[in-house]
Each structure stands twice: as C-alpha cells, then as structure tokens.
Image (cartoon, rainbow, N blue to C red):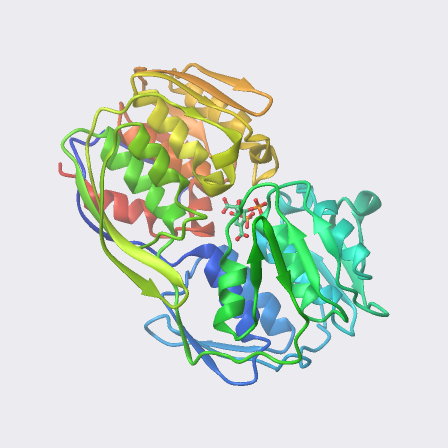
Length: 432
Ligand SMILES: O=C(O)C1=C[C@@H](OP(=O)(O)O)[C@@H](O)[C@H](O)C1
Ligand SMILES: C=C(OP(=O)(O)O)C(=O)O
C-alpha cells in the first residue's frame, strides 16, 4: 500500500455497508474453538491483521485453522488439555487483545511459552494482567520488572481461583483472568469498577461454560471440557461502524445503512452519545447472532451539539473516542471527554495523537490528563497528518478530511489491523 493516502472532500455519503466482523469476538472465537474437541466453523470472521495474530498463535499451539474461499474458518481444536508447547516465540503483532488474553490461557498450560509483539505492543502495560494472574499462581515474567513484553511463561504448580477487584475497567484483563480460571482448582470472582465488554462471558456460554453475574461481579467455576457449537456467526463490529455513524452524521447530504452491527449493550456507548448529540440514527431489524444481539442501523446527516462524556460511559466507547473527537469538531458547543486516561496506553497515546494530528488541520483541541475539550463547530483546513501507525487514528483522520477540506495521511495502511477495506468502502460511498 501507499506511504501516504490522499482523501478529498465529499459532497455526501450514500449506500449500504456490510460491517466487517467484530474484532473482539473474532479473537475469542478462535481461542475457545482451539480448546474444543469438536470442529467449529466461524462465519463473518474479521480477516484483519490483529485476528490473524491470534490465528498464528493458536496454530503454533497445535490448533488447526483452515479458511475457505469465502473466508469461513474451520477450526479443529485440541481439546481442553490438548494445546502443545510452541516451537518458537508467539507473535501477537499489534494486538493487545491477543497478548493479554493468551497470557491468561498460556499461564495455565503445562508448558513453556514466550510471547512478543510489535514496537507498539511492547510498550503497552502488561503488569495489569501479570499481577492478578500471579495471585492465581501463574508464572509470567516480562521485560522491565514484568511491566512489558516480551513475556516468558512457565507452568504453574497449581492454578488457584481468586477474588479480584479490578483497578481498571478492562475486558482484556477480565478475560485473561477468566481464561486462567477455567483451569483453576477453585472458583473465581472478578469485580469490575465499570462494566467492560462482556464478549468472553457470552462466548463462554456459547461453549457451555456457566458464568454468573451478580451486580458488578462475575463468577465462574473451573471446567474439565468445553461443549463447542458447530457454528459461530460473528456480528459486525460497532467500533468499525462508528466511523460511518460519525461520517454520515457530519457530512451533509448523507444517508447510510449499516448492516449487521453488533449492539451488545457493553459496546453501544457510541450510539448513546451520538443520539444525545442529536444524531439521526434508527436501529432496525434487531436480532440475535448466537449470544450476541445485532441490528441494522440507518444514519442520516444531522446538526450535532456538544455534550459531556463522563468516566462511567468510557468503557462502552473506549475505541471510539478518536472519531468522536471528529464529531465534536462539527458539533455546536462544547464537548468534554473525561475519565479517558486509558487512551494513553492504546496502540499510541490517542489523546495526544488526536490533539496533535487534528491540530495540523487547524483544530483547536485541549488535551487534559484524562480527556479532551473541544469547542465546536470548527473549520478544518487541508493538511498532511500522521496516523501514528494506529488504525483508529488513520480512520478518524480520513473521516475528518472527507468531511472538510481533504487530508493526506502518512502511514495509512495501519487500517489493516481492524478494517482492511476501509478506504475502498469510503471511496464507494461518496456521492461525487
Ligand atoms: O477485550 C477486548 O477485545 C478489547 C478491550 C478493550 O481494551 P481494554 O481491555 O484494554 O480496555 C479495547 O480497547 C480493545 O480494542 C479490545
Ligand atoms: C485498542 C485496540 O485493540 P488492542 O488493545 O487489541 O490492540 C483497538 O482495536 O482500538
């Protein structure tokens, strides 16, 4: 792909978008199917770099993953106790989800493994998973006093269940603990400060593992085997749909139909916030895809207004803040984002990157320690911006430029991490 991509302003967006498979659920489908002893087919799997990292790691652990011409996966697991010691270092690439979830799974296995990732992932905090997993008896060591990957994992003498109050609302930490807890000798109870995405819990239910939820706590008992479904159909990723929700809202003369969007309530903060900002969003055709709710969404242009986005909703829209910042630039009045300090430890520091890169287009954005303050509406000018090699930054910048005077994005191909066809889809939706 190009070193730089140029996007020009659009007169409106129109059409239908089939939303690609959910990244979080795609990862979990391969991990759990890998522990099953009957084959599982996965449809609408997200064929993007992050999920390929998970496939690569699971293959290295002995799981067979085949893909047909239509992209359907056929996964033949090794059974609950059947994973084998990898011959080489496992590579999680750019994917925090792959590394953190697999840390929990690998720590409970009777073999040695080492996991690394790209330069961005090797800077992301890993103590948040190592600390609770160590309390469970797992042996995981990392670089700089176990703060960062590469991680070296040796077998645990015993895996104990724990009661753990999570200091950060993180589905990755929760899921790492839940995966290890399956192999423990006693139950595990996790309490979350705020509800984070619950795809692991739902996927556990799909594989016959009971999960109890009481208030903000989740408890599970250890198991001896999984009961796999024959088929998992992955819902579309609302975090990918978010770019079209914002784009159609802020570009006048737009109407888009987004087909097959996951509307799990732990992920729909973007819908709540955009509706509160005055977006014209209609949810239709609500249905179930296994244990996950899905719908089609129609979005039309609307004049947005600024709002306050507080800490309690952040986990429900954690990956959508870069594109929400773009929406705020087109909204009338002040938007304040608070309690979003987690954005500083994503693929890049997303609070800094949003202020810096949209700033190159003339946006005035105040970066605070835990959020952003944006007065709108603002006029943006054409500029050359950098993606910071972060897929969500590249896509947010693309929408900002398409909605204003155009943009050139350096290092644009990072969209392959979660939405490989993003630029092609955008080109096909333009009215001009
Ligand atoms: O569990 C998951 O699939 C994810 C959880 C979130 O991260 P945290 O758990 O770090 O909040 C999110 O930002 C990430 O894109 C995917
Ligand atoms: C933060 C993200 O993913 P991960 O943590 O899996 O790298 C993301 O997709 O925005």
